Length: 276
Image (tube, rainbow, N blue to C red):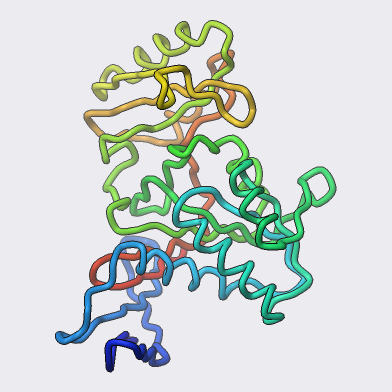
């Protein structure tokens, strides 16, 4: 195991970790724990997210095409990529952003950007998640970028997810927070009613997402988002995804199933890497 300790208020020492495998269900997990000695100052959640994001960035090699995620944790990874490019430690990479705000961040850091049109094969995508279940299936898209995220991450050879431990759930929808569905603006309420009825056995409440002014939130793709709130977690995410996809006017949903190859979880007790 690695230990992360402050030997003084201004000096940080990180010793090289030894990796141990432990089995959880049918999926082996690679665990790396970081502990802070009693006299040290506790790391904040943002500190842990940054550590986890930087751990994910270690997987990047020169020559790669990268999928650049969206959200607070993914932003740490994009920042680290920019720093490594600037220092010359990383070179000859290009990125495909999953939102307009990630595109702006990447451009400001000097990260070369391309599109799926010209680079349909992605070596590695790094992004956050809103929920992670024991099978490493995900709910994503509370930041509104679910369509572009899924388009990019679905074609990535490797997809590393970075999240904090509050995102761990026993079943998708189990957090009680939003599971987004992106829909066309035309007759959006028609689909809201259909989605709520589809999941009535899970106590689903469907709401149109609105912005700070109370107006419908509009995605980068000029669509609306219907957020589904479940009182009980979904029993079968794949069946749910299939049924949602049958509705005309649904563009995409926030169930990211069978896509993550690794998940890096940051929490009060350290950082854990879970592999498929």
